[in-house]
Amino acid sequence: MDRDKILLTPGPLTTTLRTKLAMLKDWGSWDADFNAVTASVRKSLLKIIHAAESHVVVPLQGSGTFSVEAAVATVVPHSGHVLVLDNGAYCKRAARLTTLMGRRCTLMPFDEAQPVSAQALDDKLRTESTVTHVILIHCETGAGVLNPLQAIADVCERHRKGLIVDAMSSFGALPIDARTTRFDALVAASGKCLEGVPGMGFVFIRKAILEACAGQSQSLAMDLYDQYIYMEKTTQWRFTPPTHVVVALHEAIAQFEAEGGQPARLARYTRNYETLARGMSVLGFRPFLDPSVQAPIIVTFHAPGDPKYDFKTFYAAARARGFILYPGKLTTAETFRVGCIGAIGPDEMEQAVHAIALTLQDMGIASAAPAA
Ligand SMILES: *Cc1c(COP(=O)(O)O)cnc(C)c1O
Image 1 (tube, rainbow, N blue to C red):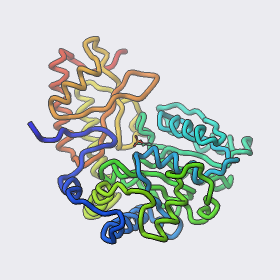
Image 2 (cartoon, helix red, strand yellow):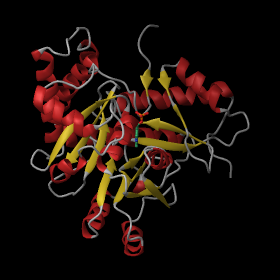
Image 3 (cartoon, rainbow, N blue to C red):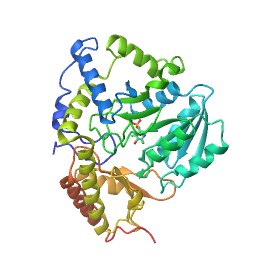
Image 4 (cartoon, rainbow, N blue to C red):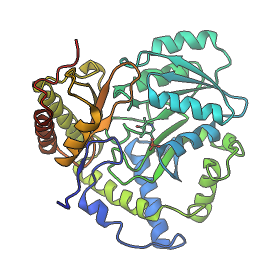
């Protein structure tokens, strides 16, 4: 069968044929037509979170992590002190890259099954006076927890701290409004909820702090201030752009807008999530998170307790039936993850659950219930 498998992964994810077809053309990086596409994408991105008045958006080549790293190096002064609210793997990654960028970094640990606490941050900032910036992961893709962006932004504003938001797996699906939520930088990427292909990230930077970012990054290629200035001056990317990724994102955004924008995307992903949760619970699977803290983006399930279960076999059998699952990323429990995002709907989720049911049968597992 040469049909693409359905990706139940949080990026890369399943894209539409229309988005894929947009890549069947070569573009010159100096070409006015291509630069008009870049400009249009940037304008659309600002519109999605109502940021045109308050922020600029700077695209950057590479996977999402490149843009998180670029944002930290561009926005945080060398003498800065970053506090990372840590409830999962992506938080730890943000802390590590902050340290590698030579910025002082403190981790503030939280339970990975719970959202981070705005109250705890408020208390912490009362005593930790040297902190200049806070990093929040909006949806912690490690377990799938939704973190309280508005409450954290309010605490940061009250304490006059900069806020850097990794909204990689939430942007386009969960509501974000730059008019009412204050942040210095917010990072997302092409290959997540906008349903483009992977290859570029983008960073919203608050206009009020932009000038202070000049010369702050120790990196040439990942200096977002330089990228911004060059792009404003020339309409071009500073270095070779990921042309096919940009035009695919442009096409994906046109479909995003036609679908009804963020509210419609959230509604579809929520239906995907509900279909998945219902079907998996019938098979005996137990979700790692309480539904009240779960974002409808990616769901972590406990591994079945049956000794015949092992992830590699399970993955291979589901794959043979056309569905790509995702390993767990928790240190505390054996789990696996299923993404709800991408150009898929409840029908595909229904089929995925069916494929998983047959996979369990193949493995001789009667119930997927976790070990007691
Ligand atoms: C996907 C993702 C990233 C970026 O990961 P890459 O592998 O670099 O694309 C960063 N943060 C979060 C929360 C993510 O979901």
